[in-house]
Image (cartoon, rainbow, N blue to C red; front, side, top):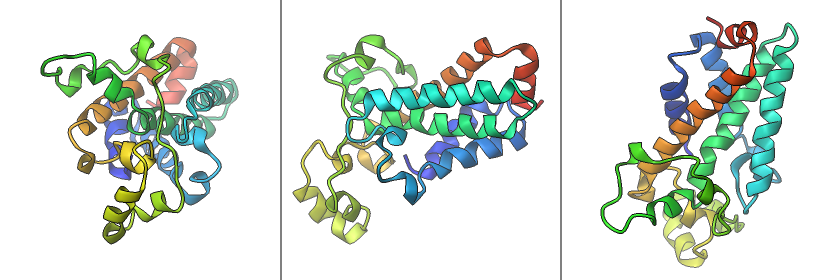
Length: 207
């Protein structure tokens, strides 16, 4: 997703719980996942190229870093790992067809975006779940406004350019990706609240 939406989802879900200092570091780590060095050879960070299992493992790994850091006197690395984790969790909904699969369950008018279940297990485990493939150089050229129409004509429908829900220009499914990403952010924090001791949690929230 575009930067502003990663910020929006993270703040909407976590502002009631974390200090502003902690939240700023978490968000900065989240956004650094979109640095150029993380765009190539790191499909797990963004669930690109059907790296579903790798993305899941990456989230578990970063969650482990959060807990390991909080077992020591440190705190900064916990916030950074949590920000990295959240970026990947949020990208799941904008880079895979999860939203499409969820909406396909409804024959008539679908429920509003706020009602999306971000972790419906039969969809998470569905063999139909997949993410957009990166076709270079055309997917890169699609970011250049005057070349985007050409890229869309040449790229297959399973490309990142066609599949992503990174911004409102992608259509009516985008609000569902935002709602699901926000709920998933809350879910990831709830998981840590169950795993951390009260003392560790208090340091993590920095309040």
